[in-house]
Image 1 (cartoon, one colour):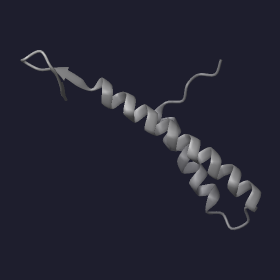
Image 2 (tube, rainbow, N blue to C red; image 1 turned 90 degrees about the horizontal axis):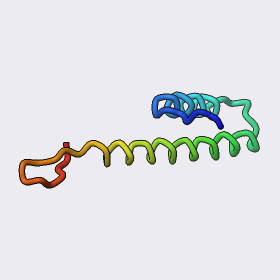
Image 3 (spheres, helix red, strand yellow; image 1 turned 30 degrees about the vertical axis):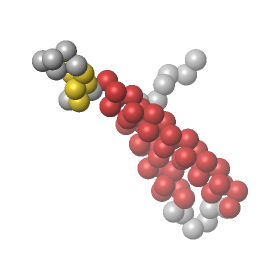
Length: 68
């Protein structure tokens, strides 16, 4: 099984996709393929950020979870 991509790796790959989409000689078919891959990367980034936000909680003095 492939190792899961880190958030930093996903952002790097997304930046590469953006650079490729900015090329003038890219075919429409290739553009759509890169766009779809980019949308998947954005979803991966959002999922990872959501996970981190949920983990960044602390136990308050009253025993309740508070945002960090």
